[in-house]
Length: 402
Image (cartoon, rainbow, N blue to C red; front, top):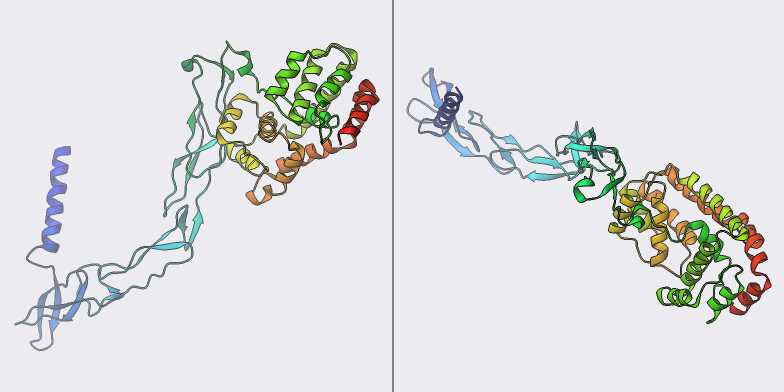
């Protein structure tokens, strides 16, 4: 049956070509006023028009269409049609007017024609993927990601991606994916990869910065170590910090290690407790962030100094919970820009996010975080806990360093 249908279509195609392009052109009926007879005249081929109709003794005389005129089909017209299509805003000329066709216009890349307007292709939101890409004539068709697939970006081209098969990679699933995010995998043999790994949090940075002078004396690290109560940090660890880090970063790492070594002491427990309260407040502000890769990339791109790359962002999205992703990326930014203040950098970056149609709710949340970390409460925490422990020794050293 299919073979018969195929043969029929082939013969039909041959017949059409024979009737339109063969030795015998198609005909039209014409009344000859001289002989008062009805004649069957030859039609003129595409790209031409009838200059003179046929007579009993003469065939139809055809002539080529002039510039800016066209004839699409075999015809018996006395003139060609004018190329009247003009490309509108956001269109370009796909095919210029010629003798056999009118001008063809098409919407520019990323848009499609709806009535007389070139509208932007719909962007599928996170959790939805493209099942049919937009064309110059049709809009994008989006569909919710099915079970086992996800999309974490807003795009008019991206399809839903299959969740990573952790077991196939020899890993375990740390966090099951959903329609918005991929599965998060971890290696059982290395516990550190199960965690997001923020070495110094925003609250710790805000707290520790009060203890660190802006200008450092050469022996500041040793003076601070001697002034800290509780279990002392040994010389080997101090030397390791000096070799691995520099300047202000040494202070953060030293205080972090001191806090860890003395976490069972009452005075340090109070510090840890208050910093934890601070971090809980920060998390409350950004708990609903749930940003896409695109949004995180925009946020990092707006911070000054050395940039956090796309690979770091992708790795962070896989290893960290949605509530930790911004904090981890800010931590990575601080490591790349050791002498800069993360809170000041974030304040600078927030000023420019509106131009990128960044989620307003997230901008407001991050502004609240900045305001909280700049608040007088943090300074009081430092005065109450840190200065009372170390005493006037640190204060006097800070004055000498400035």
